[in-house]
Amino acid sequence: DTNAILIRLRGDGKTYKLILTDGIPSTGSPMSRSPSWQIDVPTKKMSSQDGFEEMNLPLVDFKPSFGGRPSSRPSTDGLGKLDSSTIKMLGVMLSLQLSDGSPNPPETFGEGIFDFSLYIESLKPVLTSQQQQQA
Image (spheres, rainbow, N blue to C red):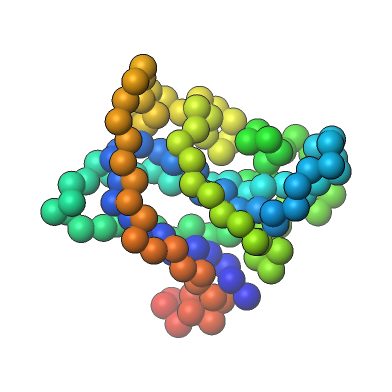
């Protein structure tokens, strides 16, 4: 089982979102589809000479969302846990909102017309057995 994602990146000081989904398109209402799962990825401002930073993103920290907004459904309907076996697509975005629905502040989003730069060297699943070996 996968229990985390290890991301190796060089950022620009902005906070991005990593989004996981089963890839099944919506048939209309939010109740007719699976949630996407998102987590904030705050980056450090780095240059190409700085190398990379690594982040371990536990799947339990991903939040369910519909249309980019945090889910308001009660956790009793099965949305409380991300099932890694259903994930077929991933995305990265710079969003006006953080994963909890709060505004992404100008310091970590930007104002007006701004540059952004995110270089992802790798994304790897962290298996439960690997996590136990690292402990």
